[in-house]
Image 1 (tube, rainbow, N blue to C red):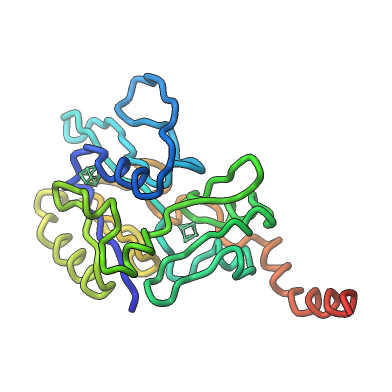
Image 2 (cartoon, rainbow, N blue to C red):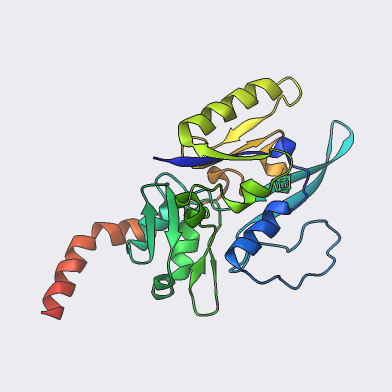
Amino acid sequence: MAYAFFIDTTLCTGCRGCQVACKQWHDLPAEETRNRGTYQNPADLSFTTYKLVRMSEEIIDKRLKWLFFPEQCRHCIDAPCLEAADDESAIYKDDATGAILYTAVTAELDADSIIESCPYNVPRKAADGTLAKCDMCNDRIHNGEAPACVKTCPTGAMQFGQRDKMVAMAKSRLGKIRSKYPKAILADPDEVNVIYLVGHAPELYFENVLASSRPSGITRQMALKRMLRPFTRAVNHIIST
Ligand code: SF4
Ligand code: SF4
């Protein structure tokens, strides 16, 4: 069964409960931060920050607005990072949940090409090249619990459940808020299992709300590598025997 998140950013107050809950569940250390003149901290996702509530200040209809975007891996349906890795011991999909999962074997991959493949610029690497990102709280899901971020959200901005129900919820909510937010859209709902609803133009939140805003995906180099894969495997097999 495929699961999905529905994240309604129009209900997000930027409390950062989801960001903290993610750290707690994964036992990740806090980051040293500094005052950068914004309420967003830390500045970016990292090897130890899988969930980040992005914040921007915008003048919309002559009024100052705070826009929040609780960013995380989208668990793409056809994940470019998985495709780029081509190594199921490093990056694989849990077919029972739809989660795209990274292991310590990612240290043996070309980290930069995996990062480049992601249309949302999500994976982050450690000093030794190991990659990390949101794992959908896959362990919690297998034990009948919602992801920690969803469980902690006090406003109902984050929802989680069977994908078809989340898609229906997202479409219904979009219809309901259109009069108040005429520019509202769902971000890439057919491609991902983390479906965001944004009330304003996507680029006002940050640069990677939509996959199309990043010139990435499968690069020419990766496509060539994929084409040559059977030949490479045959050569490796001959060398190893
Ligand atoms: S958002 Fe990026 S890291 Fe997450 S599954 Fe998609 S390609 Fe992979
Ligand atoms: S817990 Fe909910 S309301 Fe708070 S920042 Fe996260 S998504 Fe927004």
